[in-house]
Image (cartoon, rainbow, N blue to C red; front, side, top):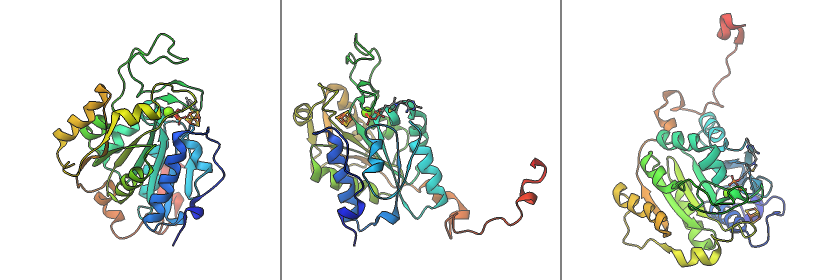
Length: 283
Ligand SMILES: Cc1ncc(C[n+]2csc(CCOP(=O)(O)OP(=O)(O)O)c2C)c(N)n1
Ligand code: SF4
Ligand SMILES: [Mg+2]
């Protein structure tokens, strides 16, 4: 049985009080509680304060290009679909530069969980505005306030085919752990948008802000209705933040459609012996 210590890497360098601390502990706790070991998990990290978790979490991992954590994870999953595959990335990474991949991850229903640190800023590069920032948000890159509408990650995921869509708050570890466990257990593309205060650069979306404006979905909430879930997701534009599983459905994951993966993983299958014959005229 693995322990939190087994999953623990270097001491984090995050600012004191950053929401990333809670997210890091929640991910490790969820994996331990599920009985997983570091050697049974692959994490594809984005670039950012969030992506720096690569150094602080012990598992198989890749620390890739900004915006490209998801395609790396998809490639990994298809090569070894028995491994639990996770993406850890920032909102700038996943909803901005990697927005295109987000779309195709949803519609492909790849069996991957994306944990997104939603702090509304580019934390690592010192506080420029990120795609989830509210209209008018002032930052060093938008001194007169951002002109664009914010990206709504939950409504996007629901409408583009993700089969598990949830939201958590970095200030509520027990709820975050339960939500992450459900996401990791889900077969298909799951996303947990984590509201993550950046205490150094974002003076709007603070812990008190989210404590006041977030609420847990009640026990009567049924996450199987797309229209109801969409209504919950759209509350974001009224500065209301539902926490929990907004939407969930069962649909075969991408790799389950591939007959060549039915019996074994790609990595375990024999390598082609005659590469020259395979490449033919190309070499
Ligand atoms: C292709 C590319 N573009 C831009 C950068 C510079 N860069 C590094 S981190 C970052 C922003 C990170 O913001 P986010 O993804 O929200 O993560 P956070 O730091 O907030 O956790 C940027 C723009 C980069 N490293 N690579
Ligand atoms: S800059 Fe913000 S997101 Fe980055 S470690 Fe500090 S508080 Fe966290
Ligand atoms: Mg960010």
